Image 1 (cartoon, one colour):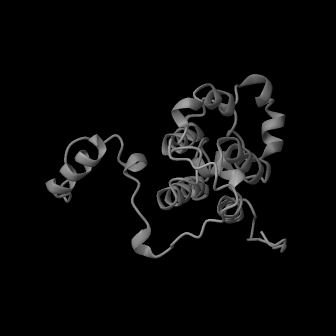
Image 2 (cartoon, one colour):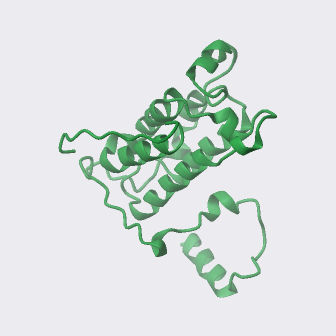
Length: 197
């Protein structure tokens, strides 16, 4: 925010660079914490910078060493920020889960291919629908009711102590039912009571 330029670079530039730059922009610029801004951030720092979605998500039979949950890590890190700053984000966790699920569903052409050139050569914009249009039609269910429009110039200062990193049950355990073996029943009752309240 002080006008200082930085250079971020790793060996290839399409994995950790996308993660680092996108998270930095989420922390620094409130625009990217809006629904429209988050879409623009993914388009810019993931799709146009050439994150290899097809290889990293394992869409095609190929080198299994190329598969890596890089984008899932970014979605999880965004959720971690949301848990620490619930009023700073216009969208909710359902929005993140919808994006994450449709990266792997291949139902939309948005995340197919390893770079923008692949998507242009496959003419995906002509042959498939965009995920963003679908999400826009359901925008009401993705709005965070706690969003504070007054805090637009705030830079987030997350606490990155290990004890502040939480396990995202909403993403990783959403298809499980019943009590988990190591989960005390009192914790489950407390969570249920908080949810009901």
